[in-house]
Length: 215
Image (cartoon, rainbow, N blue to C red; front, side, top):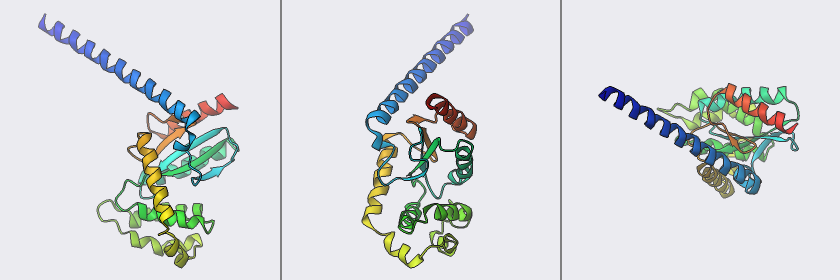
């Protein structure tokens, strides 16, 4: 009898937990949807780096960290999804440099914009990440030996990466990440909808659902 009461109590508690979790997710989704419609700047800032068709009806926002291994792993996956759906997806990169010292690499990326070498620089960073982004003993200065492959004027990068405006952009992106409850990278949103269960398959499904809804 005691076991049945205990089991029944557990089932009730589980039911309450699931119902509460579902309600919370529904409320959160509604909040994100409202922000996407009425406060789009939380997802996309004027300075945000974009890739793809500017008029695409599916906007993929990624909060990323140049020192994040998973971000590096997802980069070719996202580009393949875009290639498989030409003209339908616009990628927007935002920063969430959660790793120690990762803002150093963000500053380099932002300075590379002035030389129109942003994507080349990011690719070099991801390809050489294992050399300088060790979580235990990061060595940020090592990045400089790889950057010539991006075709950069390194002296100019070293000067312009310290522009106070870049520091403001990082601060703003971190504030927006906090508003959107991004706690780890990469953090994805598709047309304002968060990727609730992380994974490449789940991201593909979310993107496809938005393509189907908008095209």
